[in-house]
Length: 249
Image (cartoon, rainbow, N blue to C red; front, side):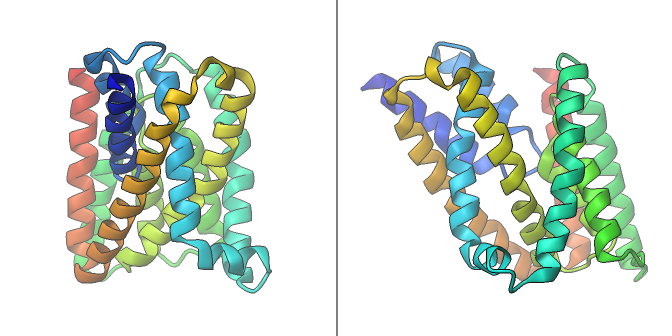
């Protein structure tokens, strides 16, 4: 029973931190060590991604139906380009710099970039970037997020904010982009390391799914109520907080 409670707590943390610019793997790994969960804490964090993957699929199920039935061709093209750019790049970077500690610095740079976009929004300056180019830019940034400590959501939110000014739409596209990336990494993980985990971890996956759904809804509703300037400042602060946590721990 204690193991189930421990894994459930870790699942809740995964469901919360997946969607904000603080490395969910880092937070869950730290908590796993503190709670003495056993095993490789980073692998455990990656396993719990199954829950947040399910949450993103379920929460945006109408969007995915539109994509898979080819009714929303604009979104389909955007996600295809972003995925084609991010997956190969992410795999290459994962193999080349698996042990790097550059993530905190990149996350701080992302925070600074969001400050600039907040300033541009205040001055009503939005870059004229087409849908395909924006998909390639955000796909590139998502690919870099395999660097340890660098937040996927932070990087894609920054990229999208270069040409978008609706916080709800930025969050929606960022989280939709996460699905193919999480699906690929989860599949890779299950094939090569999934056999190392017992059924005791599945309550953690369920907790990750439920808390992920709840926090997605909270962030989406927040995006509906605040303007872009405030949105960019909040996520910039989260990026700096995430970078500070990476440096401290």
